[in-house]
Image (cartoon, rainbow, N blue to C red; front, side, top):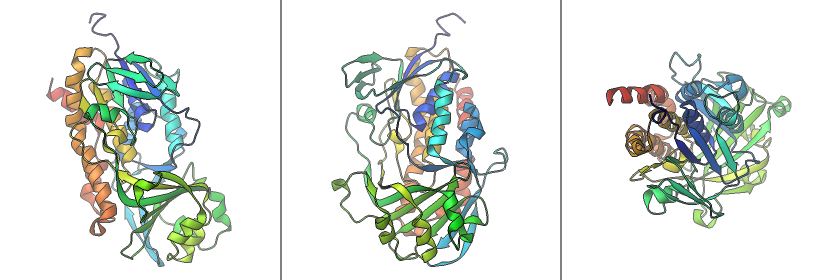
Amino acid sequence: MTEQETAPLRIFIVGAGLGGLAAAVALRKQGHRVEIFESSLMNKEIGAAITVQANAMRVLEYLGYEKENLKGVDFFGTVRYSSLGGEGSTNLMQFPKNTMGRAGWLCLRTDLHDELKRLAIGKEGVGPQTQLHLGKEVASCDPGEGTLRLKTGEVHRADLIIGADGIHSVIRAHVLGYEQRALPSGISTFRCLFDASKLDGLSDTEWFREGISGARVVLSPEERFRMLYLFPCHGGKVINVVAHHVDDREQDKHDWSAMASIEEVLDEFKSFHSRYLNFLKLGEQPILRWQLRALPTLPTWINGRTCLLGDAAHATLPTLGQGAGMALEDAATIGCLIPLGIERGDIPARLEAYQELRKSRGEFVNRESLEQATEPSKRGLYARSKDMQAFLVGYDAVETTQKYLRDHS
């Protein structure tokens, strides 16, 4: 190969969340010069806790993660309870044999974020270190030219731009040519964490402590949707609390994320058995009330030499626990499609392949996540449907992309 054929591309990623960092790692592995523009200073906790299912674990293995750094708790499935109390029913998740005997990890979002950040910007990683620009807010993008204009007026030019800037994406409007906001679902969720040692002084906790390692789901039999999703993370030292509920407020008149009190949580779930209310009382500040919003299906994720990734393309509800998984799959796919040797002029065609590989799958998760929260007949379908589990967790983004490249070479 000539020097020109092996020259690395200059690639910009807007957003340093899970998807943006994962894309940086995947493209760094290929030998490209990657820069991330992040509007925040990354000095605040990002989210609470998430499930990392088998399809996402497979991407992390490709990226070279150290499982000890994730501090994950084994995820084998869920135990479902009625809000009235009583015995639970166990739903084991399917998982491929090559996932170390588990269906996934339960982990703090910050633990996963820190590991991806290490892989992206650490000196010991494969390929050139990613440059992370903090406090750099993007004002606009020219998708065809591959330029970013910052709020400061600076203009930067790249061979490829990846909009991984989340549900409030700036890049999305420039890819689409119009503004598209995520739409309210009518459901909000209270989220918080608490120290697992608090459970030692609480009676009637067998329902949470015993049985499979995984999440506990508590669902109201009433028509009005109320559901708790509870699990340990961070090596079992922290308990994650998610409390979904119908939100009767006019959504656009309230902040998408706002502080809440434990009194508000208890009032919303006052019809639940005392064992669950006592559990909720352990919640620690900050307690956030998040509106659950979802993007409608977008006509395209690509424009020129610019693409959308993760929540910027397919933000949805956490019902299937696949939000992070889809972002990681997107990242692995774009990384495999842009090996060293690809030239600037090849980028639009490679992004067409990215869209062909990713768009329908991302839209499936978007749609199902929304419907399984808002349509009573579909609630809990993912836990029951072995076919849907096989479709989602059995997917190998790296292998699928590599096969696509072989077939289209």
